[in-house]
Length: 173
Image 1 (cartoon, one colour):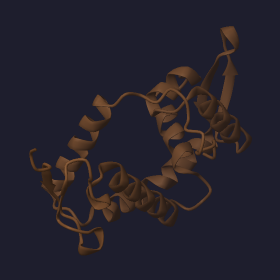
Image 2 (cartoon, helix red, strand yellow):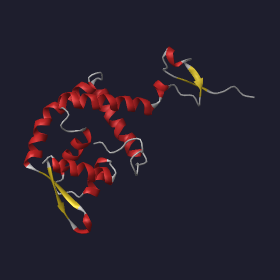
Image 3 (cartoon, one colour):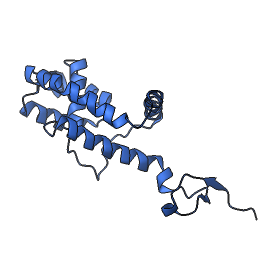
Image 4 (cartoon, helix red, strand yellow):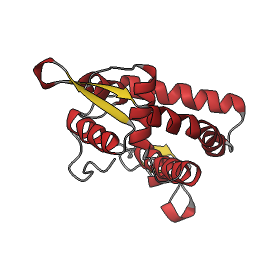
């Protein structure tokens, strides 16, 4: 009988022994856990710097519409990695706030455009976003920041897309 294969980890003493069986990854070495914690930090910094009038998901929609005025909701959903129902609900909320207009197209589809108010909102969020990004990345050297962004893009490019929202995450843009 062979000994169990172990993998070295960067586990803290609270996580237990540094050498674990190959099928027992310390929580602090689980990519999903660290990504979740990084997401929590990013959302907290987003609200701290950009306020609570716009959510990160709404911001993504607005930025996508700024780049591609008139894009349809289905294409928009694919571009910002949201399911179509969440994208539609977000668009309705943004239209109610006066930041976008939804123009009816064929087959019940809608083209989306920023309003002047939406454009002004985005213009006012540019400097706070730069501050938020700098704060989020400040623990990393410039080369490390570029490498992190490269690796995140690579991770996401190779990921299997989620077709529907997770049940425990209701649409709360």
